[in-house]
Picture 1 (cartoon, rainbow, N blue to C red):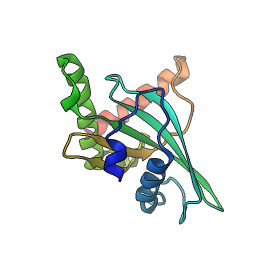
Picture 2: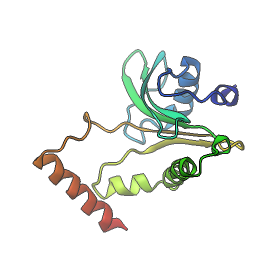
Picture 3: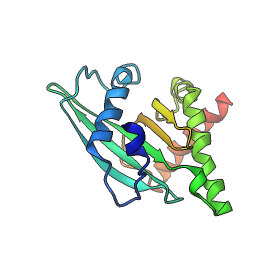
Picture 4: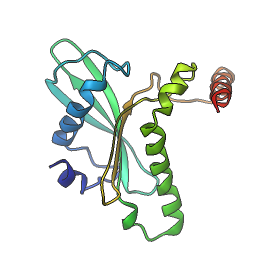
Amino acid sequence: QLQRQRNCIRNSSSLMDKSLALQLAKRCLPHFESKGVGKLTEIDSVKPRNLLGLWTGMGSVDEVQVKSKDDSVSFVVKTVGSHKKLDDELALVDHMSYYNEATFYEQNLSDSICAAGALCPKALLVDRTEDGELTICMTKLPGRGFSRNPEQTRQALQWLAKLHALF
């Protein structure tokens, strides 16, 4: 059933199906505590929210809020359609960066980066299909985004220094 729902990768303006959000939340639930998301042991409800569409138009980034009786947590889901549906060579190059991102999360490099003091989303689930579709569930970073001011720029440069110290 998950495969059938994923076959209909959404564009940036559509909302993730609640049943898909629930299935992903159930698969991520065992990892919430170890990845610092929260201590949920059961799921009462889920609420998906579209954040943005992917550059290639073949997927989206969504936030899924998960509620239980005692707590509420959120995680991020990136869904990517199959590269096999692209005929534009430049779009294919952009699209392949998503597969590189999946490999990054599959190797748990994000955990190493966080351990070095550079905040980074942690993988909860990476799922690839034979058709080339991809789903990455990851922790949500705190904050509202980056704005260009001297303090945020200093923080970004400190983060880059920590990252480069690892590699």
